[in-house]
Length: 171
Ligand code: FES
Image 1 (tube, rainbow, N blue to C red):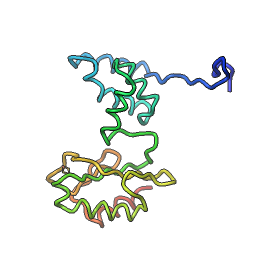
Image 2: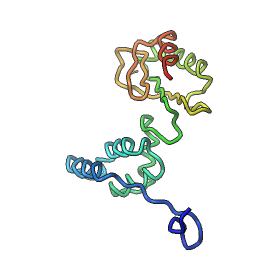
Image 3: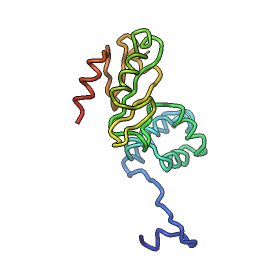
């Protein structure tokens, strides 16, 4: 490690996360579309996710600085929503809808089946970091339940067999 990476006390310091020029320009345009800066937090988090692959603690600090709120405020938002990718997530993130319309179509049983197949509980990531499985609120596919998103792609009218086929088809 280079000396410049160490603080005077000898502890390690890190470069702060920074947007690329292109993303920064996108951010600057984005904030003009909102009546106040903090209203642009959710799409700003999407930019961070896209630029860095997920939203880490450093990503939350970056969002806080850009938006002008505290990192604690950003953390409250990131942890409220289930759809932001976190560093602890696996390669494939399965988000099973648990809200009433999907529940009436068997979402609970599907979740049990999915967990059993993957050997995980809801909210867990496999040791090999291949899968994360989450239970989430409505993903706006209510007429096609039970539904899930797999890395952002919708899968609807799920059955146990269909779920297995999708998962078995992943590398
Ligand atoms: S209730 Fe499942 S997608 Fe809306």
